[in-house]
Length: 216
Image 1 (cartoon, rainbow, N blue to C red):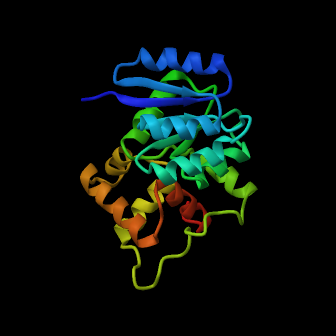
Image 2: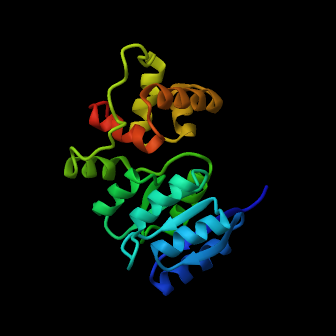
């Protein structure tokens, strides 16, 4: 199995060096490039096609939010994790709307960072229910336009509704499978159907949808 390739984006040399040291020492992960600002990140992402990008937001020039928007638009196979200093950072919310697969605090333990990378590389999202709820309270009315009620012609089944609620609580496919006594492949199928029926881009929008509609 090949290594998960990573691009580190931060305007502080020490932060990039620290992350690179930890990540390159972790089996299955490989840092293939670094960038000091959003513009450089967009260029490096197009050149290197990393699987996961760790993206700071407050950088000179093009910030991490716009860089994330451009990267996820042009390279949808690349996953972006927004790194924030504060758990209520408005930039984290903007990053999720821009297409990021989640966000993580910069002072998170290395084990959490590694787990986050592996999770998003596997197609899931990193969204803390506690932080998501607080952000929704702060930025209500600024949710993605796609997070709308389902059309009457395509209602969710009872099982799909259960899966949506579990996603809204921040559970992974493995955790949903254990809680609902289903196989992971069945959960994955239900997740795909939920996203398709509600016309949601990814699990991040599913979490936002669940909170917005009072399901969690």
